[in-house]
Length: 276
Image (cartoon, rainbow, N blue to C red):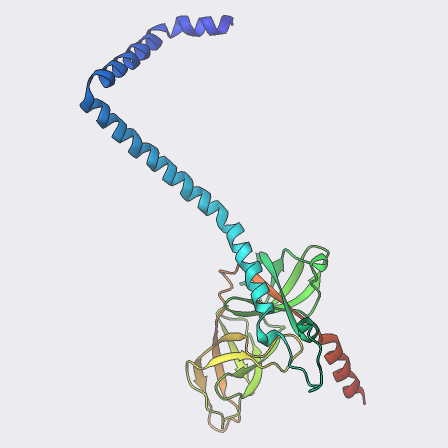
């Protein structure tokens, strides 16, 4: 209390000045219609500007939540697409439970770490074993294939991205169906190369490259990129095809992890056949 009185005594002239100014302003506004309307208009504009900035800031802070909601919705919708179900091979199958025929299930996840400037680039996701994620699951975004899950813990997963020199993906020319191996050379994070496309295939700049479906990881037809350069050296049997990736790895926030429900059955059968 003593300090309060000291403050009053020290600044009593300034305090008195502000009180008089406030009283004068109130008198002017109360007895002059023009000044009152001008003040109310100005204060309204100022307040409106503050509210607009506040709302813009609030909307910006909500973007992450909105994007997460959209990612979960996309995963749900993609799981419901006809491509995620396999047609019954038994003409007399009368089971009405469509989920018994589902082949692919999609789970949304958020990228929490990512690298693009190494030869062995990895991505970290905020989902793990507790969310149904396990190794060798395919990972995609709304722009196309991203990579393959490598390791998982209870709450996190690491993904080998396509821009990792250790990863090869079975891919094909969407138009003609010729397939080969997609591989990164460790140079530009925006480009990879499609190998093993024979010289008699029709290849043009702009052709779409998609997953072939010849693996147990990715469904057929997931976008990978488009051809932006084609070479055929004299006497060569195969094209050298450079592909511009559809995914921008420097702008990757949300992904979907593909659960191939019948994958183990396929892998075990193929392994058994190889061992014969």
